[in-house]
Every structure is written in C-alpha cells, then in structure tokens.
Length: 89
Image (cartoon, rainbow, N blue to C red; front, top):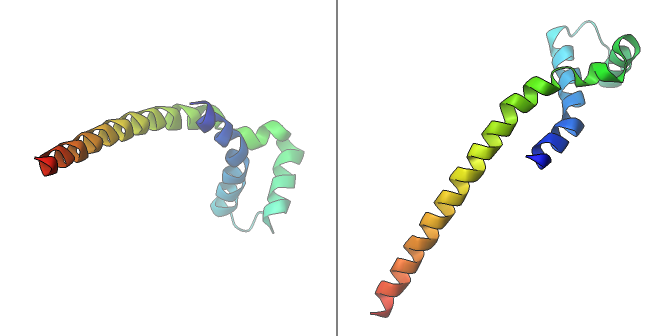
C-alpha cells in the first residue's frame, strides 16, 4: 500500500543504522556517527539498502492484514446485528 511504502522511506534508514550497530557494536560510537559513516561511504542511497526487499516483505503482509481485518469486522457487525434482532423479538 502507499502508506506502507511511505512509512518504509522514513523508517528504513533508522532500521538499517541500528542493525549495522548491532552487527558490530565496536564499529560505531553512536547512532549519528554510524549514520554519518554510512552516508560518507555509500551516500544517502546507502541508508536505503534493502528497501526493495522490505517492500516485497511488508506490502503483501499489509494487504493480507487489511483483508482479514475487514472480513472480521464484517463478521462481527453481522453477529452484533443478529444479537440485536434477537433481543427485539
């Protein structure tokens, strides 16, 4: 979905930096230092490595989640309506 894609554009750089820091804690002294090092070596595009893989993983999940949510919402509304109808009788 569009919202999922836009969200990835904002959150992916932070995810990437924190994962790199976890991979080798001795390599970077702080989050800003890690971000500067990545941008310095790979450019801003370096912060978006893995964006395509992330979207391939996240977008289908979001679509399935939305479909399931809507189906459950409709089922629950039907159940409540049936209970209301039964109470009126």
